[in-house]
Amino acid sequence: MIVSLHVATGAAAGVLLGSRKKALLAGLALHALGDRMPHHDINSQRFEIASGVAAVAALAVRHGLTSPIVVGALAASAPDVEHVLPLPRPGGRKLFPSHRVEGWHQAGGVPTWAQLVAAGVILGTVLACRPGHDA
Image 1: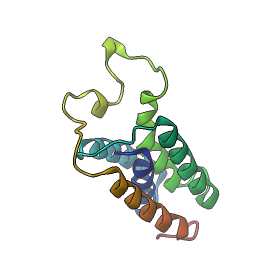
Image 2: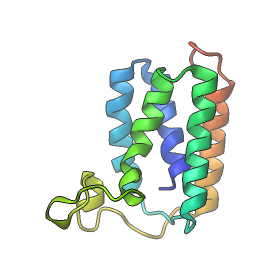
Image 3: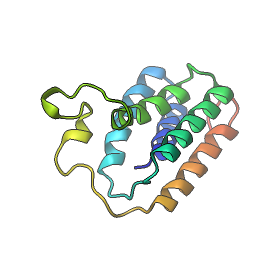
């Protein structure tokens, strides 16, 4: 799943759950589920980083850095940091479980354009709701 959709699903979880702890746990679970969904990835690491950072920044400006929405967004996208930074790999394996389970991440299925549209709709909805209120 592309980063902006990871951010969007985590943010939506934060809206629905209304708790930072629940949003954190849901965000991590949603990341794993997003990796499981057969999908196409964006080949531009620069675009992935920029779109993810921009989405989280917009959410933080609108809802506050410590809101469940931002916590969920960060939790859902943070596991992909290991694709960018040289984090330790014990035994040569990646850290996040869905990144190291053979066959979990599947190519094909949902095209990048559909993921971008879904991310835009979800993020737009979350950004449109008033801070402290449900979407």
